Length: 359
Image 1 (cartoon, rainbow, N blue to C red):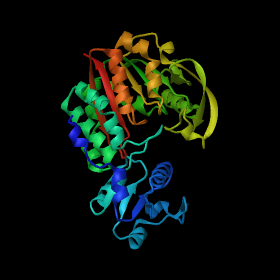
Image 2 (tube, rainbow, N blue to C red):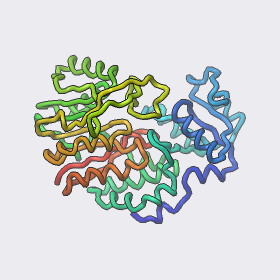
Image 3 (cartoon, helix red, strand yellow):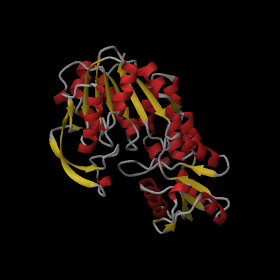
């Protein structure tokens, strides 16, 4: 990975120098974060538009939200900043169509934590990124890693599309579920990732699941009962690096989390503990998607990982530093291992995972 390929403008430098009007496409948390960064950097935003079904004379942060056609009437040659996340085919198709006609970028603002994935962040951490790159086990991972870095830094969506792969590819070429394996799901939500695992694994010996949000946990239990999955190893706690009580911001969705970024959501006190304390038999595959707490979860799995050496999949998109800190943390635990990076269909660069397995 040559440092020279990153000697280019990042998105925020591009926006600071453009003479075109800048429009946000979308409303909500993502648009809030993008607008905050623009205002902090003195980048003028001229308007906000949404898909036709979401307009309805809404006002967002002082902007009257218009349709795309209305926005183009006012600003015929804009720069467009995609300000929401999606993996839906029809929405992605519309975004690609807009990008073929206008200058469109997908800003990368962290789901959790502070700072930006800009050129300074990349160059300041280049040696850590380079270390991960050199550890990767296949050319696809290396290409994905560079494309993800460039996509996050420049906001250009073609890099993210070039990094895409499929669930089939990851399961067949990397995870390769064993018959009658023990699967551990951390951040199990409503059972969606268990359902995905079972579509490939077919038969299993045991499923252990952790989900801290009580409403999600009830949905998880309903799914398990309807599917005939035993639930004695399903835990309504937050996997963490020690036993303690955490303040939890519940959204009853995939983004429920132990983070102050969710203070508009209802806060509750929940029990947290090391997943190691609940795992007492060999494990074949662990999936971690802990909404910004992924590194703490890994710390709480140290005994399980070092003893049983399962294949581990962990999300890499919640915090800027995850893209290098999590692979290096897992490498430290495994020693001799294989490391892969995969990105699935999503804008921005969400649904990006590292896979680590023993040699």
